[in-house]
Image (cartoon, rainbow, N blue to C red; front, side):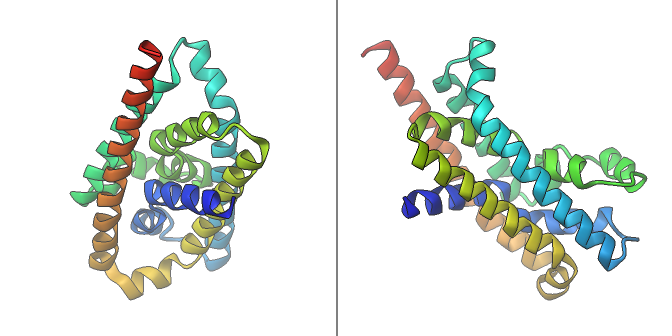
Amino acid sequence: MLTLMLSVFASLISVVNPLGAVPVYLGLTPNYTSLERKKSALHTSIYFILILTAFFFLGSAIIQFFGISISAMRIAGGLVILSSGYALLQGKFAQSRAISNKVKEEALHKEDISFAPMAMPMLSGPGSISLLIGYYEEFPSVPEKIMVVLAIIISGTLIYVILRGAPVLFKVLGVGGLNAISRIMGFLVMSIGIQYVIYGIVKLVESINP
């Protein structure tokens, strides 16, 4: 069970890539005090946990309501993850999360950015959501589902730590260091996306030819 939790955590945190969000987060909070930034980081991590946990348990029902098979969702989700990973390789983290200059400008005038755009779509986007919907079907037992939720909580906790220490991380690693890490993560994310597409295709073929 511990291996399962660590595996889900590793995949989820790779897709989410909270380190890549550091420059964007600092750019959205230039006038925040240390206390305000701490509060924003906490709220972002809580929203992240709530959003992904909700989609983990309700996602399958939602896609079934629209008549979408889990295999089709896996293939589509894998393509989204693959695209996100490629964007990371190109150093385009914000663009891959639908964070345009207009969105950034609007966020600068918001009192609270923790839900949007930070928790969604920057951290809990289509890639991480599709990943968790797939996990709900892949791990049917209650103990397995508990491990997945724990992985989400641990990921949210790590996001809080990273955003809380964003100024220090940016000072130590700089833009170059963060971009280098994001590019490495991009390669891993692309691999996860390809694996997800292949798994979805295999399951689709099995359902057609049992």
